[in-house]
Length: 227
Image 1 (tube, rainbow, N blue to C red):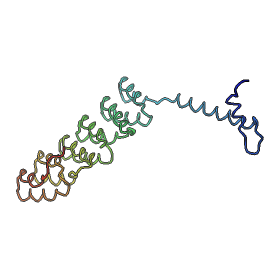
Image 2: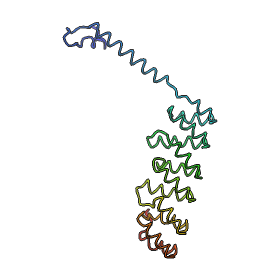
Image 3: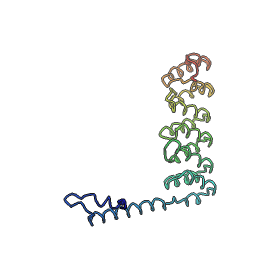
Image 4: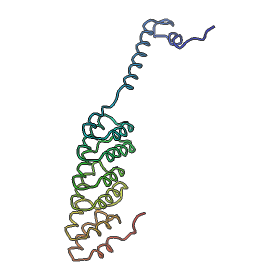
């Protein structure tokens, strides 16, 4: 005696109020559900992301293939194409997508990247900010700090503090401190030593009293550099 098939077992399931049998209406529903599932899966497999915007932006074939390997979405393709048109290199575009995906996020930071590049940040420094996951809402402040004429190194140090949740001087405080004549090297050391934003008033007051940078450091830095 042959074992019952899957369809036999499904047919034996009862519909409320209907005798246990292979009811025609139930069979029809099962067939329709199977066809819908089949076409849905086929459509998903057949969908291909349109990379034409990347070609139009002048991206190389190898970079486009790298992005395909990263399973970019249609929205990400447009973001990358815009980044390429803004002058970002192919390698950096690919790496920005790779980093975003490593953070379980879609790549959508082209506007922030373009803004940082416009104020003079190098692509390696921008990638470092991306690795620190600092191309979000705080990128505007980092852009403003770079616009003050501070080097990339200082901006990255501030981003590291933000990423780690550690104390750091705000952009407004940095601008006010720079107006006192404090050297950039001293400012960078204050940031590395996690001088809190609350120390800004003291630093400004000391410089107005003609205290040296060394005196400011001795007064403000009462703890060793964090590991």
